[in-house]
Image (cartoon, rainbow, N blue to C red; front, side, top):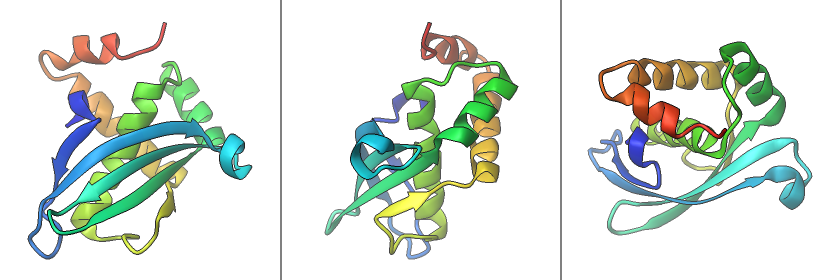
Length: 134
């Protein structure tokens, strides 16, 4: 899923369904809703219905986390963090009634650790390096 955040399957949800997730866009939220965040929009489909979800990543928490990890704050990294949150939402059904969901700094840290752990597996380190902005 991480090497292809633009389209992936997530689940099962608590009801046994697997969802198809499609990345739509990533935008600075200040431009669209006057918030200091990076918004990442996805469409989710279980085959019979389509849901829209926007994951808001607080900019200050992203900057602090990227600085602490010594990595650039890039669009691919933000998209992968948001994709992990969507995966968590589907599997736990947490916040699924909401269209806009804000990720906490603690959740961001957990997702970043998960990404770093996957990047340290064979073959993934090179992929992670290739997905960083210069």
